[in-house]
Length: 225
Image 1 (cartoon, rainbow, N blue to C red):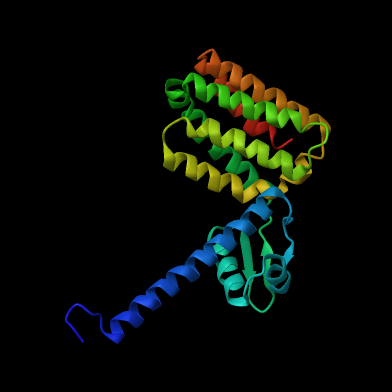
Image 2: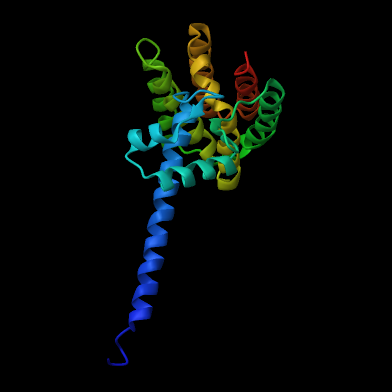
C-alpha cells in the first residue's frame, strides 16, 4: 500500500463518520416534520404520540423516531414519561401568558430595526404575504392559515436584522402554537388577524415606528382571546 492510500482503519473510520452524520440528519429532519405538525395543530396539545404511527406516517425507523422525539423533548415541544411514552406538551394558561409577555418585549424592541432596514421590496413582500392570508379566509384550512400566518410574521421579524432574536421568538412561538388550530376556528379572530396584518404593513410602509410597535404588541396579546 502506497503512502497516499488510506489504511483500512482510516476508511472505516471515515465511513462511520459519514454514517453518524447521515443518522443525525435523519433524526433532525424527522424532528422538524413532527414539530411542524405540532405547531400547526395537526398534533394536539396533550396528544399521545404512538411511535408505530409515526413510523408508518413518515416511513421512518424506530430508532430514528425515538431520537427525533428525544430532540423534541429538548425543545420542550414534547414530554417524555418513563414507562408511558411521549405526548405533545400542553402549556397551561400561566405559561402561555408569560410567553406572550416575553414575545411582546422582544418583538416590539425589534420594530426600530424593522422600520430602518425594510426596503420597498420587503414591504411589498409583506403585503403579498398578508394578502395571501386574506385569500385563505373563505376556504383555507386551519393549517393553511397557520402556515400563512407564520410566513407573514417570520418575514416581518426577519427584517430587523437580528437573527438570534428572530430564532428565539420562533422557538417561543412554537412552544404554545399547537393551540393555533382552535384559534383559527373562530371566524371573528381570523378576520381580526387579517386586519391587524394589513395595518402592520401599512404602518411599515408609512415608516410609522410607534404605530407599528403598538400594533405588534396588541396583535400578540390579542392572540390569547
